Length: 609
Image 1 (cartoon, rainbow, N blue to C red):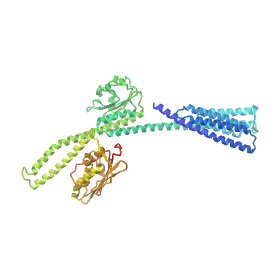
Image 2 (spheres, rainbow, N blue to C red):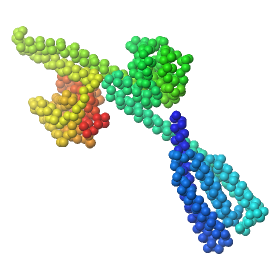
Image 3 (cartoon, rainbow, N blue to C red):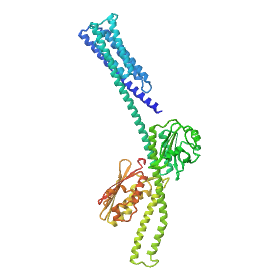
Image 4 (cartoon, rainbow, N blue to C red):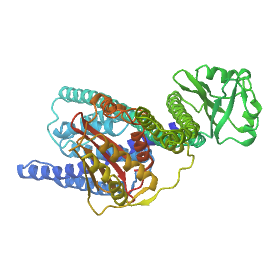
């Protein structure tokens, strides 16, 4: 299929080149006619004894058939005509031109005409437009025609129109030199044209390969983008099998995952396979030599499936219409997750470049599966751990309240201070648990709640109003600037509150008295909002900036200033922005302050952007 497509492309390319050259030939002919008429006029003024009537008649005949060629050529469409049509068109033109040229030679001195050198031009044109054989045949035909003209003139059969013939030896010597020049010219021009055509074919081949590779990489990018947006493992694998089958141009695709004991392969996701084929259930690795080899790390490609191939259920494969297949291990580093297979209903469907490309696709799919598995495991752990800790923590807080209120007796000053420190620690643990619950709940959502249009400016005013007293109490100025009008964004009320509260409270927390926190909301380009929170606080060490959005990480100077903190606030901010299809950047210099810049798409721009 691909070969046929390339042959058609090549044929159209050279057909277009031939058409352009043929029209170039037609345009040159107008110039030749004009120069011929000008030459006749000059010869007439010089008093040359030529048959001007015959010469002008030949030139006008050339103009007439050139007009016919122009009309015929304009009707020949590149896409609908075969190459043979253009080749015949070129042959007819060259033949008529050579006939006209020999008539002009006859009326301007015969074989001794000074215009005889012009026969070489048509040999050159034949070499450019036609095959090598055609070029040499025209060269031989011209030499033969010249020899006949000389012989006819010498025998008197053809009337001599000039006395420039000279001695016979000189004529034949001139003829020999011209014939040699024609053959050498034909050889040189065909060599050059042949080389150029080979390079043209190679350029077409490379261009086709680049186009094919580019389209596949674009499809692979779309596949990775779609898988990267999935939060459900089953949907991710279904997306991978569907897109892999489409990109590879096959009838079916499957992902089989190993169980924990690595004894069985179970179909985790399929595309294009019947329910009957899947009804056999798990595949026992020990009974499937092919899957054993794949799990050991080798790829397996079968160009034509026959009974000699070792399958656990060969009859099902034949009934499914699978003729060839390509299977690769899903692996992350040295750990095998399962097997990724594509199935074709054509024999020897998979070439070497298909294997290399599918290997890249398999590696990216394995990474996506492993990443999502890790995130889901982490989310599950966060959620469970937070739930397990919440009840005893509340019990501890209740007991501390009983002690503080003096129900079990009055506390002395030392005991009260110790109780106060313990309460602060427990409250910090409570904040950590709440953050863990929020993260765990968000990451474990298989169907996130739909976003709705919300006014970010209004939410920002409410959050700033809430933190205004806290900022005043610490001696920090909190300034808010909103450059109206501000279009709505797609969000949830809880999401906006988490985003704004974390960023603004951090700015106040890590800015000493006398400092300032500035909040700016403005439009950025078409369809985007820029939210900027800058402070004049302690800043962040340069070497610690890459870790800023990592779970439980706190900058060293932040821990020195205030040991209380969960290290999850900016993680929540990043996840909220990801949910809103936004982004965040941070600029900071230790001792001078920090600026967080968030870009958030508005309802005026699709969230896919």
